[in-house]
Length: 251
Image (cartoon, rainbow, N blue to C red; front, side, top):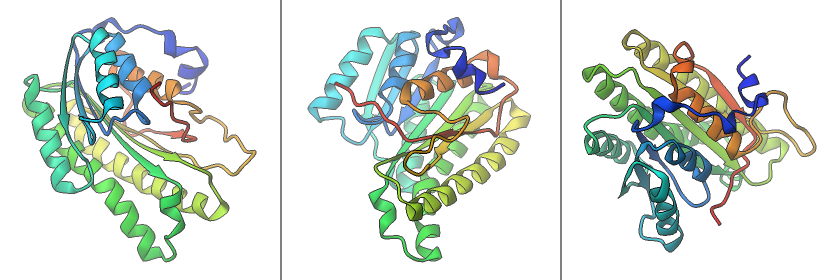
């Protein structure tokens, strides 16, 4: 049933309740998250954009494009590489519009980063480095939503890019499993407050393979992000969606 969301061309679906919604998107760049941000801008949401390269010309052009459609947009320089940076981003973002209804955190992993991981300790440390900022942002967002009695939605996405080998596919699978476990725990904690936590993880397939029931492009990810932010998904939490890592570059 969940993937019928995609099969029914949800990319063209409209969610009137998202007009004016306060949506924070972290990790946005011209290479990652463009369609997701554009989908919420087209719904006239109020966007808080966190990006690591706010002054770059391509990012400036992306923000200008989003501003043409969004109800309102605020942008701040927000690298999401450490736990402390994540806490700062989450707190600052929550203060911009006096609260947040939806939080989307994007982390991009290049397949080349996985090539140098040889031991289990290396893999565990890498997964922790990538997921800890998401965990910190999620917990702060949940706490703010709880205090303001907002039944909000949080989506953490770890997107894999670059060619995949059999070895790196196994590492990506470990990263996915760690994200899935984190998502389940945080979803259970947030559930009593009506707050939902879901994730998109790296479904690494070998060349020539197309895993069943996976998101194949960023427009499909955007469709899921809209759905999860809407009232239609009020009973959906703790779920992991698989993505093949296809990203859309702003151009």
